[in-house]
Length: 359
Image (cartoon, rainbow, N blue to C red; front, side, top):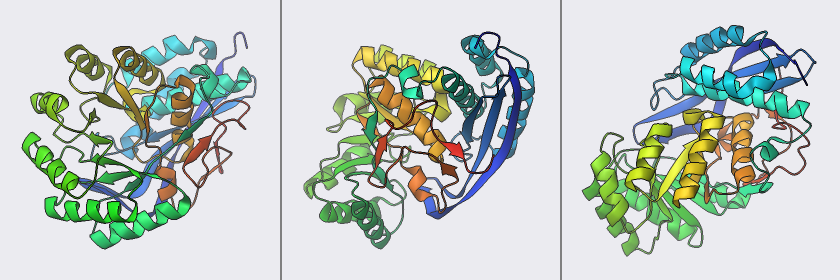
């Protein structure tokens, strides 16, 4: 392993059809438009990564991310892979405004390194466990669409649901009621993606609780800029509030911890990169803050990398790594995600264990 150099970094677009539009309160994906990375080492080992672009959330585009990855990939060539921490720190400085590109490069580098070390990625993150169970999302839509998707989710054997709300207050109440009627014993997480204010949040919860729904969590109810509103809800909301867009980097998480703003934080590889995601999760764990591992619209490659982090650290109470189920065709091969929402990482001998079908 000593003096193993990065030989080549290749990047290409991944455009994948979805089974249905992935709609949230303020936008939707009609297809996945991501970027894949292959990082080759001088000893013949290759690692793979994925950058998931979410223009309506982060402003990052596929073309811009592709350009960033090409430039940083050229910069990495010839550098010793074992100096990954210093390399990733320098990449983080270069990619401050393109964090999904950072996540993809770190993913490819750590995949290659753990393949060299002959250990699965979850051991790199601590090896606490090998199995986690994801929820599945009921996207924004009609009551009928919510019912149809809930039926599909239950048929898979998944028993944890995330319900996107925030586009139509009254319609969302009907959607949540229908979902609860169909799945009364399932855990439900609500996610407004910044669509409410504190008053609307409290009213929405009052109404859903009136027909028997007890959400396990309410994710990002207010706009990212409404810090005081988020803190107020963190203290007064009858349901634990989880920061997502308000926890977009390590400094945000540090502030949440320092000010005891909310009881839960959503950690996404595409917001932090892998190394900073682990650091942010460790900080939250030390402060007694609950953790969700989430994502944008990743394929099974990046989602399985997230599963390695969550299982390896063993401190995530909520898992939202479901977007591979929305891909019409799986562009990846390898073990990991089962049809019932379980990520079983035990069969993976080294690295992430998932690779592109065409690379």
